[in-house]
Image (cartoon, rainbow, N blue to C red; front, side, top):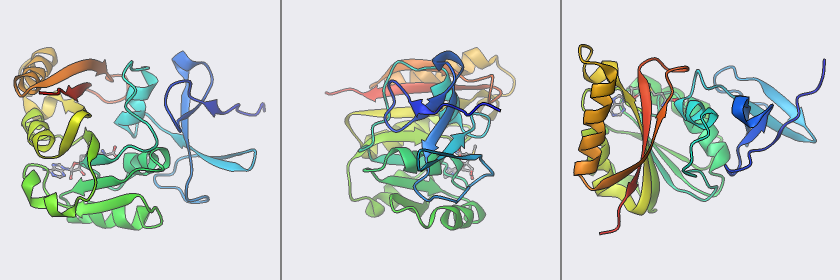
Length: 232
Ligand SMILES: C[S@@+](CC[C@H](N)C(=O)[O-])C[C@H]1O[C@@H](n2cnc3c(N)ncnc32)[C@H](O)[C@@H]1O
């Protein structure tokens, strides 16, 4: 069997690919060698261990497979992550943002326990038991400026939750990545109508939506909006 050729992603810092860019498999460098989080494949190449990043398990990986134009990942970004669950995507972000900090907010006690178990050896993750709907309540846990807010909470008012968190925490020209699940908002209207409404809520709050990425292939009824905090 031929060896997989793993190389740097041409645009995204600390993300690695094999195959053609249009049809790439994704990887991150494992900062805790030997440790898997969700049964992902580990591959050794030239003395380094890589973790395969599965777009069916991580919407962030799904976005990257669509080659978005906004470059939202650089290794020194500080990220507020809303809806951390047991740490699948958070752990890959921790590999990528090696000089940044990830504040990982999750409100389910069982999930946060798993998150802590899964990621305790990773030094750039701060797990926070908190409710994304009430951002003011976890403010005291932050000690750096937030460059990037990533939200994946499957709540009925996803855009409003994102806006509140951006108002509290996102620095000027910071970026929001919002995964929108139309079924959690309105299971009767057409998905495209739901997405439009959510986008309008972001725009009315002063965020500039710079990109919309359809990830239906990997996550049913989901799109992802990338928005920028405009300088006033
Ligand atoms: C789809 S899962 C997230 C998967 C995760 N982003 C990943 O890729 O590994 C949604 C998570 O959001 C959490 N969640 C939902 N509403 C929340 C809220 N208001 N505050 C914090 N977490 C919330 C759920 O408990 C669940 O763990």
